[in-house]
Image 1 (cartoon, rainbow, N blue to C red):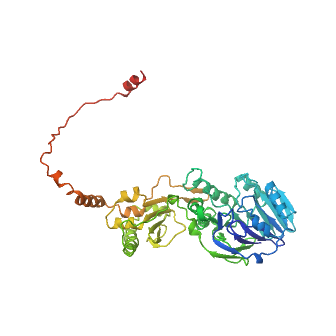
Image 2: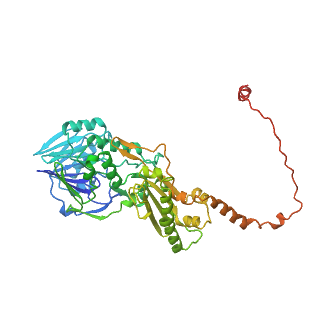
Image 3: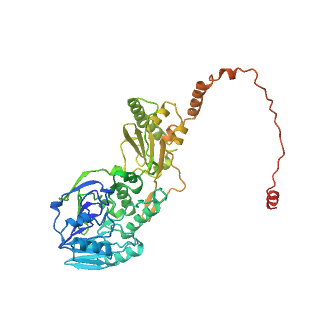
Length: 487
């Protein structure tokens, strides 16, 4: 069996004797102009192979794209959930061979077996099992799974060779509904727990490979809390047996399998091209939502001087601090495999450094790490002012020029373990936790202002006040107060 990733939820499945196109979204933008597939891809429409069966999982517009459906041939068989809107729309487009199916319905098409799988999200939707002599493929799409659903699937198909998993604990309406922007530990833990129950031979992250564009692009920082790379790493821990069979499956990639033998081919699809890896735009950053960090450089520091001083402070001084304190301040960082990332916002762009505390040799390295779980953001001019000791931590923290958050957890076969009793200091804040910084700042202000009012300082008419210590035996009887307040 061969699966080609067109992008997001759109896939092309080739079994031994039939070809299936599922949830085709063939143009960008889609979803009423809100989304682009991410990573960015190009579909070469003239090269899309002929297929026998079209499958629509549900009516959400990133799966049910009218423009794409209008383009495709209308003489194919179409499998849909029991949704009158989907059926009505397809018939108006010219499709006639339409088969609405409920939960756990089974079909046999030649030598290929199909079974729909249930979702607890009760918008009519399903996942799909494809099975032939080479093995079993389960495309979960957006379905919300519970253990009884998994048990029912495994009764029919005890071994899932390839799982296209529900993986991203989406937060697409949290901000709009004034709900928490904290990392969704519970829902992500449930995702990993379900994969452990399924215990597939191989796994790829499925749908949820898009980005918001234009006016909605700010939502990219809160909707997608898990990176594709982090999910692939976590799956290898929750299901150690699949560690070598976890494939990112990006647009244009293919997976072909014969039972437990897999061939993963990046850019193996002839009718899709990956244009640009723009996944960095999806990095989860709830502390920057609505008011991104901007460096206006109000003190007009020289840009080159800032860059050189900051690079030295991070790559030399911060590295030295981490190494010196690795068995003290940063001991828990190592025990919990923290990957720290520091993002410095300059007036002309952003630079990033990271330190992987799971490694033996600890140092700050230049670049982005998609596995980072302790993240810190700061303006370059604020950073430079700390180096020069012209501003203190109150300015950075209270002014919003330094921000941080973490999404630290450990993965075990039963899900996630959270560090409820552990704190992880931000290495950046430790770097400037000098006891003399406040003294230096106050001394500088004293020098600036002490001679500002010379006439007042020399005024000999100032009254002298004699202070005396007075000790009083004061008592407070709470019960007497309560009685008097009642009356």
